[in-house]
Length: 144
Image (cartoon, rainbow, N blue to C red; front, side, top):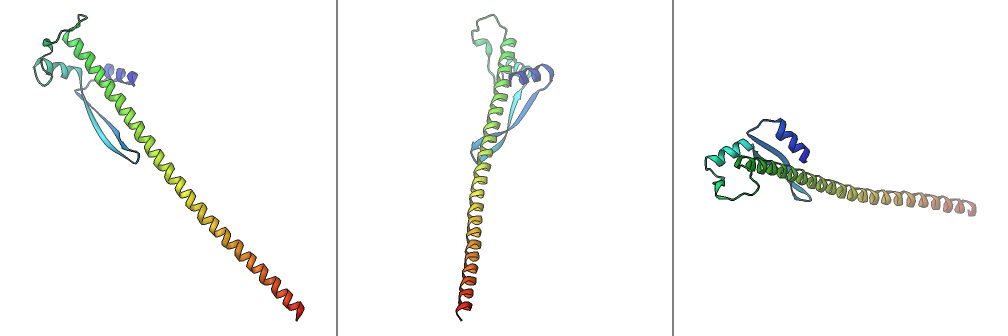
């Protein structure tokens, strides 16, 4: 996932990315979900304007990174996390759908086996009844 995230961040120009995935709700249900990730440039512009991100100058940062570098790193980390979460949620939804499908198939196979067993037993019983009728008829013909 991180390789894909790095490729997108390096080669794709965007203001906002929308990642669409199936969010796992339960084994039998999942919800199509859209997650939006802003580009590092938008995040930096928002931080400079003092918008929703607040004032980053009020925090002390070790390592000598500039505010732009910090925001770039955070934006890349957030994008990777959102991508990883989307992949995990989608995988869980897929496994839930597979479990549900296999459970349904197993139940249907059991029902089919029960019906076939009943049909087989009825056919066998009819065959035995026919043979007994023929034996009794043959014995009656010999006596009489």
